Image (cartoon, rainbow, N blue to C red; front, side):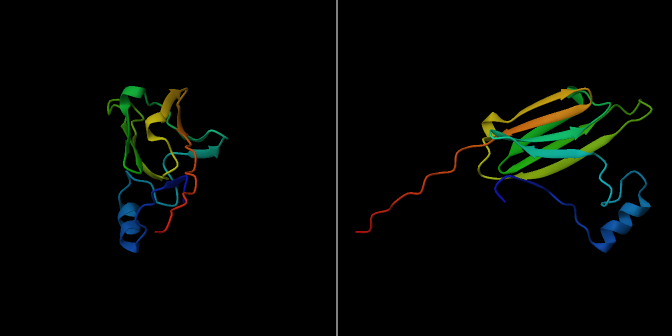
Length: 125
């Protein structure tokens, strides 16, 4: 996939059983953070619902072809939360141009597209 792909968790029977008996984690079929991905002519836009988070609580990194988001609200709040998400990004994303903005509990990550490389004719000698 050339664009954006969410890293899926291990969905084995044992991991589901562990998630069921650990009340601090949601089941894999019910994502803890809602997300929306859409495309514009210039970029892919990923929006995440992160109520209660501030930009100081969130860490976003692009490493190789992986976009990794971690965050945690202070434990002294009545509704403290954690988030840990990963997405594989394609080779047509300009990693140096990735931007993120948090407003009204919604994190908007913009992943600008790069041009597809032109076909190269190779002379055979």
